[in-house]
Image (cartoon, rainbow, N blue to C red; front, top):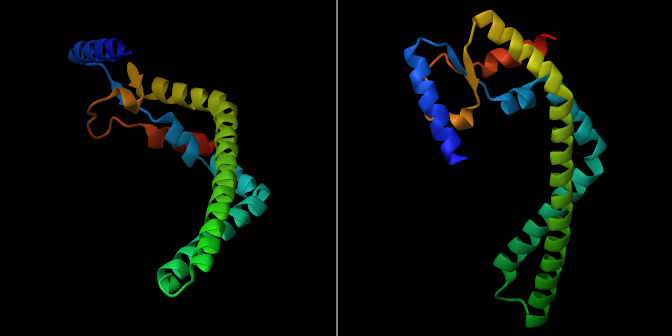
Length: 163
């Protein structure tokens, strides 16, 4: 993989001498910032509101227990501290479980969105490439430096939102 990146950069450098038009595009950022993604995120949040409320409630309870221990910990009996500690650990485990499930669901939803938007994105990107006559378009993770005006992510986002 490293060799491929070095080879690509070497080719890019030699192509640049031939006055090629090169652009950088962050397709994932364009997808996530698109109007379609914003609508999908709102739908997802509405569908998962009870889970979000559960996570928020658990966060509040965990913070409350921490505050109580910090404030009253010195005057509590060992039994009270032990009960609070056990309650904290139980809620922390529940919180972790719900949070992980929410993160998995978010990732799955974003993958489905990216797959659904792929044809639109490719069409929009092809239109930009044809219109601006780019010879090479690369992802930002393949670039060490890009000058001003080489990032066409905003242009791609505008095309996606226009459709």
